[in-house]
Length: 104
Image (cartoon, rainbow, N blue to C red; front, side):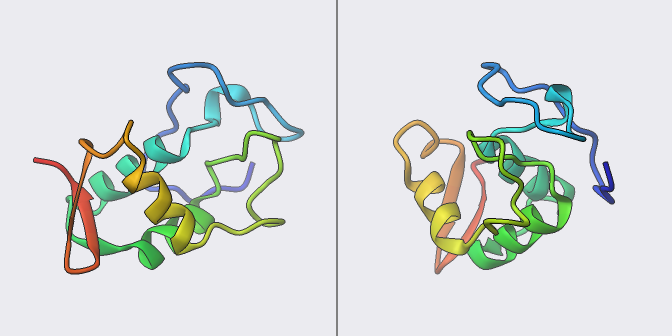
């Protein structure tokens, strides 16, 4: 796998990600794990959803549930905003003035 990620890959907690060719299960991350890792790598600075989506696409560690790579279906800011707003993940993140960071 060709990845210039600034942080190590982690195993998914719930085992929901399927492995795909050239991409091992242990490298896969859920989207909220990927967002958390990106914000942590950036010292939890406020970032826009577009900046986070760009980082997700660049790092290429997140895979869709169907196993398709993001190069075929790039992540966009609407998907980031939807995940941040989801009731399961709302407590993990803070929003202010169109920017996102990890909840303190």
